[in-house]
Length: 270
Image (cartoon, rainbow, N blue to C red; front, side, top):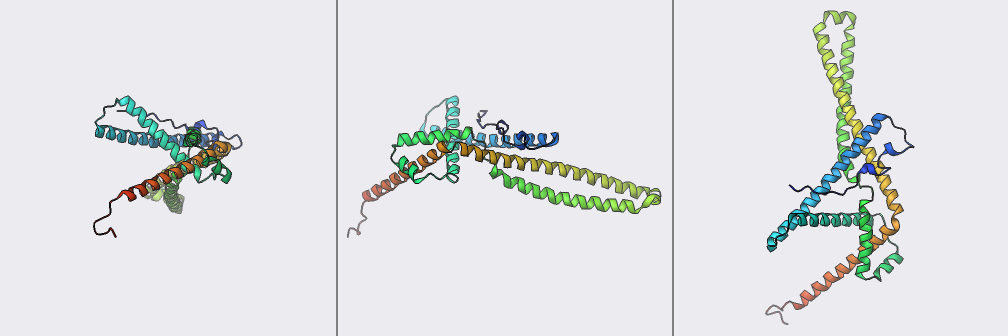
C-alpha cells in the first residue's frame, strides 16, 4: 500500500520546542526523557494527521480520474495528492495567521493595486513558510487536559485508599501482627497493590504534564518565530484577503449574469 511522504518537521528539530532544550531551565534526566518522549508522540500525531490528509486527497483524485475515464499512474497520483495536501496546509496556515496578524490599511491598499499573479507570489511565499514554522499544538491541549483531570481524580482516590489501609495496618500493633497474620497479610497485599497503582498514576500524570509543557513551549516558540517572519507573513495574509475579495466579486457577478439570463415564467411578463 502507498506510504504517504509527510514533510512535517520534527518538533525536536526546533531548539525551543520543549523545555529540555532551554539552558535557562534546570531539569533532571527523568524530566528530559519525559519531555523528549512527549515531543515524539505529539510529532507522531502530526504525522498521522498529515498522512490522513494526503490519503484523503489521493482518494478524491482517484475518484475524479475514474469518473472521467482517465488512467493515471500511481506515482503521479501520489505526487499530486502530496501537492494538494501541501497547498491545503498552506491555506490553513494563512487562515490561522489572519486571526493573529492584521495587515495595515496601507499594505491592503498596496495589495489591492497588484495583479493576481503578484498577489499569488506574495501568498505562496508566506504559505511556503509553514514547513519552517513550529507546529500548532494548542488544539490538542483539551484532550490532554481531560485525561489529566481523570488521572488526578483516580490518583486522589488511590491516595485516600492507601492512607486508610495504612491506618488499619498500624491499628493492629505489634501483637496484632502476630495474632492476626492472615488479616495483616491481606491488608499488606491490598496496600502494596494500591501503592503500585498510585505510582503508575503518578507516572502517567508526569507524562501528561510533560506533554502540556511541550505544547506550551512550542506555542511560545511559534509566536516568536511568527514575529520574526512577520513581514513576509503579513504580506501573504493581505494578498489572501484581496484574492478572496476578487473571488467573491466574480461569484456575485456570475450570479447576476445567471439571474439576468433566466427566462421569465409564463404569466409573469408584466
